[in-house]
Length: 107
Image (cartoon, rainbow, N blue to C red; front, side, top):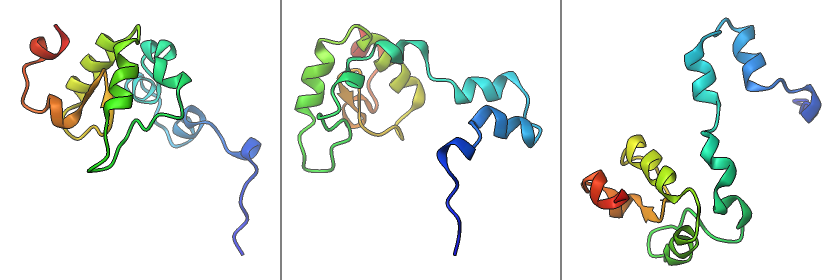
């Protein structure tokens, strides 16, 4: 039987990375959340499906995004991440942002 470690026994990602010799600014950047995410309205609305499946509406998430203080930063993040990013980001889904010029979407 495999023992499941207690949550307190599992090291954080920075510690784990240091243990295997990955001490670099790039690593810290990869593991850190963008600062704007702390102010994102979606963090306060877990009941909304931010990752709707094919055939499900993304409208509830998009409506919530319309009132978010960091909508622009979120959309810019999604555009920089590319078409493989799933879900609703900055009020748009990947399907809506694909192939669109950033200035038209962020405006």
